Amino acid sequence: MDSQNKHNPIELFLQHKSLRFRLFWEGIAVGIGTGLIISLFRFVLVSGEALRVQVYDIVLADRMLFIPYVLFFLVTAWLLLRLMKMEPICSGGGVPQVKGLLAGSMSMNWWLALICRFVGCCLSIGAGMSMGRAGPSVHLGACVGKGFSSNRKRSRTEERILITAGAGAGLAAAFSAPLAGVIFCLEELHKTFSPVVLTAAIGASVMAVSICRAFFGFNMMFTIGELERVTVDMLPVFFLMALFVGFWALAFNRGLILSMDIYNNSSFLKGRKPLLPLFLAAVLGFVLPEILGGGNELVDYMVNNPYPMAFLLTVLAGKYLYTMICCGSGVPGGIFLPMLVLGALGGNLFGQLAILIGIMPVEFLPHTIVFGMAAYFAAVAKSPVTAAVLIMEITGSTHYMLTLVMVSMTAYMVADMAGGKPIYEQLLEYSLNKKK
Image (tube, rainbow, N blue to C red):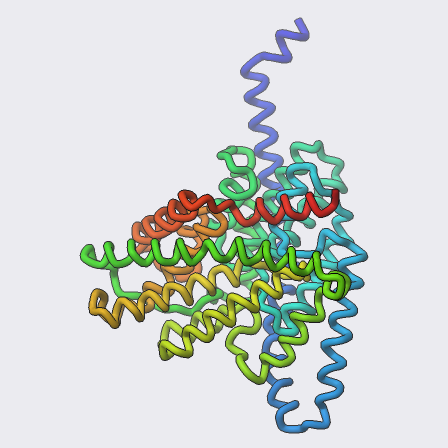
């Protein structure tokens, strides 16, 4: 009799429905915590980047400040090393670590990881390293989900769902893109559609974005503005652009793994990983400041002020190489935003070449920048749906959704046929192999 009740479909349905209801409200609670933390995170990073620009001007005006300027970078390197040793899971971008937590191949002290990740990323990104806030925001949200489930002594299954919901809320809050946060949970973290995960992720993402908007308003990470509607005759051009960016994206995965190998095989750099990127940040602030930081302001500028071809190539090469040096070091900081910026630069390069040979009018140059971001992320992360939805949300326009899906899937297929692997899975595998 007990066995029959145990497998009664009506009873199982009610249990499942009750679980979804509870996880929805718990997802909202995780979203509130994540939204508050990411709001503070965004405020500190924006303030730090504004202060960094002022510091370069002050040091140029008064050479006597050069010694304290250098000491700042040395102290920052020491602090980053201490944080990475204190809580190793705070190293790197954040998304591979969350995937490791969900798979059970990594563990963490959630409150220590949250503090070390928060402080470490503020130091590295604030100092000018070519890293972003999105991946760290995913990890910070996962820490909130982990802490909430631990305090309420939830099962391993429920814990995984709340970690996922928190991670999606972190991405949603970082970009002010709730739908992208939900899709990211399903496509990138769980790799499957689950109504239970969907319920918790929606509650968490919507609440986290609502809190961030209460502090920052409806401002998007990118202020691209309204674009011209895409005409049918332009679709073949954007298809070619997706092919171009898809091949360009193959260099990201290979370059990043190569950079990590160089750091780990160098007797000098291995124990001093933050020194090289911080030294370059100190120099590049006076030489090529465009490639410092995440790069969202660089994208905004390119949309309205096309770079000359020679300078565009310089920025493209500089941003790629410096991103590899920063992200390969394992310092806390994300690769999500640099990926989008490199895609925008690649799209911009294609657009200028297309205008030069006469196959595209100049008014569609901003489109190649926007579509380049989606294509590059889709090819590198192998997440085309997240790429299309994210770019749609952060640009605030839905009328070119069809084109976004087309370029995302095209670049994805290019990377897939060339044997490219999802970057986050590669980074997780690399990290686990290093521990053996």
